[in-house]
Structures are given as C-alpha cells and as structure tokens.
Length: 272
View 1 (tube, helix red, strand yellow):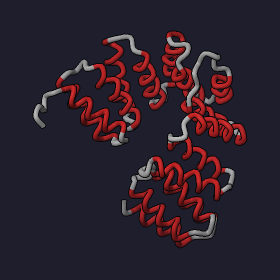
View 2 (tube, one colour; view 1 turned 90 degrees about the vertical axis):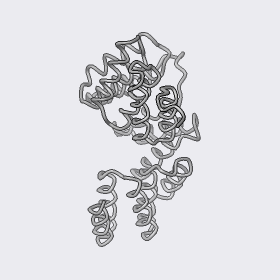
View 3 (tube, rainbow, N blue to C red; view 1 turned 120 degrees about the vertical axis):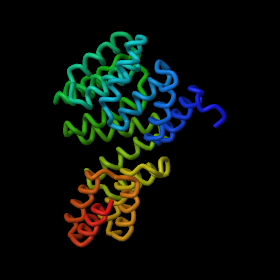
View 4 (tube, rainbow, N blue to C red; view 1 turned 90 degrees about the horizontal axis):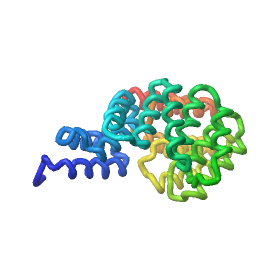
C-alpha cells in the first residue's frame, strides 16, 4: 500500500498466496513483481511452479526458459520438465530430469521427475525401478513415496501401493495429500470405513481440499449415509471440483441404485 512499486513486497505476497494454495492470486502477485523487475530470480522460480500448479504449461515453460537464460538452475530445470510433461513433450522432460540427476545425484526431486516422465511415456515398470533403485545417499521424503505409490497403483500393485502410501504418511503426518491418496486407494479397495477416516484426516489438515471432500462423499454414500454424502458433494462442488470428480461421484451413485441423486448431481453440475 505504501509503495506499490516495491518488487520484493509483490514477490513475498505471491509466496504467501502460493503457500496458502491461492493460485490465481499468487500468479497475479508474482507477475506484478516481474513487471517491476523482469529478471527477479525469486519471483521467476516461484511463478514457474505456480503456473505448473495451474496447468498453464506454456507460461510455465516460458518462465522456466527465461530463468535458465539468466543462470544454471536445477529448480528451473525441474519446472521446465513438469511443463514439458504437461505439454506431452516427455522425451524432453526426461532429458531435463536426467541433467538434474547428473548435477545433483543426491536430490530426490530429480529422480521423481525422471520417473514421472517415464510413466507419461507408458514405461511404468521403468518408473517403478527408478524409485526402487534410488541411491542410498538420497534422503527420501514423503514426496517420492507419494509418487511411487501412484506408479505402483497404475501398475496394478495395490498392496505395494498402499505400503508406499503408509511410508509417505510416516514421513509426514501433516501432509494432507498423503492421507487423500490413502483414502483414494481405500475406495479402490472398497474399504469405505477406512477411506472415510483417511479423507476426514485430509480435510482436517486442508479444509479446502476438494478431492478429499469428494472421497468423504463417496465413502458415505457406500455406507448408506446418502444425505451426508450429497451435502459433502455440494461442498466439494463449491470448492470447484473438476468435472471428472463429478462424473465419478455420479458413477458411484448409479452403481448404488441412487438414480435420482445422480440426476440431482447432474443438475447441480449444470448450474456451476
């Protein structure tokens, strides 16, 4: 307010918005910082990341390339790899991830980026091998266990996927996304009491997690708590649940014989 041309303040505001999952506000703040200082490294780093979060991959790619033109930056390489994956340019993403691993062989992020690129190329077995052969001096966090769980689930290894999720949770009990993934896998396994408990834990940690709210709704529908399930769907819908989530909820309702409720959900979706 005092100095609207203070680039540092705009960049810090963007960081606060980013940490609060207010993606659009974060993008706007970082962009203001860069209008004032086009080569501001901190703002470029974070803007590339937030663009990827918003699935604005062309903008993320441009931002990462700008940053790389200013300095060697492995974080920018990882952001570029993510943008390239989003654009379907997986061989180039694999190249960037491999460069990061070569330059930072103990950095977990490079291996995850490589594995994700391999998965996008349809090489799920090779992706799983990346996780299973991480060098001993790589300090693993919930980050790599989370994506290892996804790779295993996609490969049809449900028990191994759940074991990886449990390792992710053990590494970070306060990361809502680990609990959210556990809830999803439990829904796949039709263990609705346990999936409900995991989804509730996720929303305790992140009340605005629309998928966690949806997983509660699905679980409660299967447990016969239809009124609560519909109310939770309304909540998820108001949190901007994507159409894919709505369609999945409808599929569960139809499978349970709740055809009128499925029609009601369709009407709610039309009114968005």
